[in-house]
Image 1 (cartoon, one colour):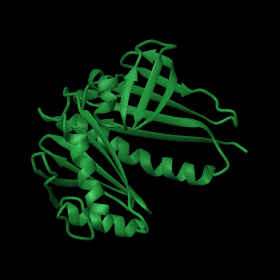
Image 2 (cartoon, rainbow, N blue to C red):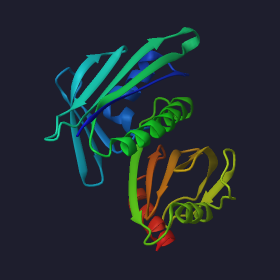
Image 3 (cartoon, one colour):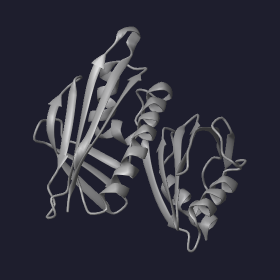
Image 4 (cartoon, rainbow, N blue to C red):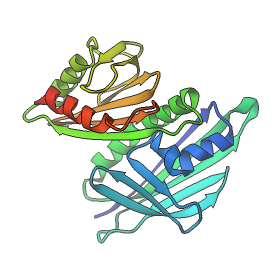
Length: 245
């Protein structure tokens, strides 16, 4: 049985409406703060696609009003499930912008767990959007997605392994300094800018690095702004697999 849901959030961002529009309504913009590799056909009725690993999900652009409103909706599945996203932009004084996000749709039988995960995730994503607009505005990020299993390890054990690999003290706190050295890449040296029970985010001079941990697995969603990112995904995959192996 499906269950309707709606999540609504509002945040003030340190960027012009034009910059915010580029971040939420273009493929390179979404690549720079959200998840996966993204494509947006810039018109109402166009296709918006997200690819994470081997999974590709497409949606239809249901509203395309540059600088004001952008919305998408996935197709309805056989069981009735779908997802809809709406972004509303309003400029404010001092070069800032108010962004309102509405995420709605129908969830499946395990709707409560899905809803809780979505509700917890959105504040983090908006935080990452703020980090991007504050520190990397006008630059297109290269997304890096990596997943690795951690056989028989609890979420707490996976988190502890990540903290060790990033040279972080535990408990991991915002403001802590992180260091890692994936083979073949420049060392990661940065500051923890987000830490909760599910994820850690580190900002460096050339990227935003997210480490998501659960029971039996870990994910990484990075956004890289440096000059040499071609080897990053393979290098981070080797680093994570070795860390949890």
